[in-house]
Amino acid sequence: MGKTIEKELLSHLLQLEQPQQEKVLQFIKQLLAEEKEDFADKLSDEQISSIKRGLQQVKEGQTVSHEEVRKRYQKWL
Image (cartoon, rainbow, N blue to C red):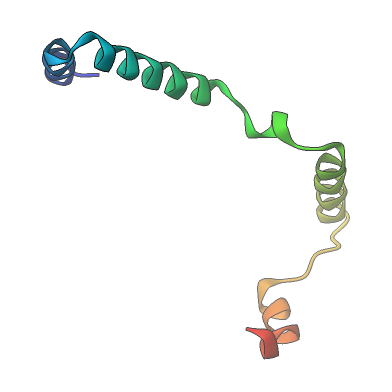
């Protein structure tokens, strides 16, 4: 982060009253926690199994092109 942004953030933060500073701190903590989360950790066993099954199908060449899918389902598109 550039020094200009850091100075601007600090300047704004210093202008806030303590309750507002605490809200900003909680917001920053929440942002940092979200960055550490991996969506894959929230997948169910069924979702993981389905993904693995799909990857295996790709390895085995059991795929359908986008063009073919559009042809098959054109009446719904």
